[in-house]
Length: 506
Image (cartoon, rainbow, N blue to C red; front, top):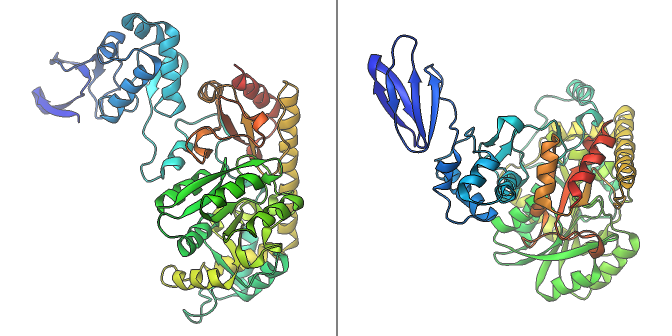
């Protein structure tokens, strides 16, 4: 922790752990406060002192292992311990290499490793500086996906383009004119407004015994797993898959059993192995899979259903892209209606802040889910449910969603074609994300960061903590993948494709 000391004229000087601080005053020379590592001259002001600038010799004295991993680990320990703070500047590659007696490539590798995990960032001539830590309230894989310093173009988020969402203002106005501010006559009425339930049942891919709404797709999956899986239960999950789902499974005390994919969805043989290993619940994204864009075909659904009939397992389908997906709404529920809980999110189509997802499935699961929820939030805001009803029935909003679906499809195709011009072939897929194999994931992230582009690292999408595979084993690069939210990509597609091609190369 910084030490506070008082010097002449009642001026408080902040002394850093690793800094020798020379304070200069207009009228007097107070002197020097000596501490450990680097020397910084500052003029006294009311703001905290400037960041430390480390010399290579100072940092070298803390390095025991002079490999890239060892150097990176040393810096990481100093950051975690508070000896290096956000904004502190590291020595140049050549300076530290000379002081350690190693090649510049060795130090560069360490800096790249630190940059890839968000500990430092290279700012060109301004040097390499320590980044602030990610938000501590985020679960582990969310933290890995969270960005560090601002980027010129952030394609890491997995969120829809806000310009393509239907306008919510007119819907709010219409609902406000038609309904009282508090449209709840009793606390024990149905959690779903009747008009929304009719719309949901008319558009559901199978006839569910029960249907309700909750606060987003992950909320739906969480409540379903809490209902059907006890501590230590095994859950079959896609590999690669959705990182927050892995965090959720871990926090619930469940065990992940990875199931690989191909271009048609979850592989039947891999699912069979997972079920043989004791998985009692299967979580699957039926279309616009995040991160690969894969969608389950009707033929694959029949193959998976045949496997499931040989086992006693419940399926949870996460249709997170919903109405912006171009692929058909293929559901295992049409084949196994009593064993499928289907979740449809409206976040990507109508807005993440609506926090609405519909859940349909067997009464044996949904009744308990609704009953438990009545002892918590009770229901999803009926006001927002009526807003969603308006958006699902208003012709302008319907066309806005259809337009978004066409634009996302066009953006995926444009990036695919632009990458093909650089000799890179990717699956066409669906949704707002593209899964790109790269020669070395860490290097790719650093190169893209230098180009002002942020993408999501591939490692958090791995179900077993290793490198996730591509939709086909032959497509998987040993060095990993990155996920690009192509839904946010505009006219800069050619420049981005070039940057991606350079980043993916050896």
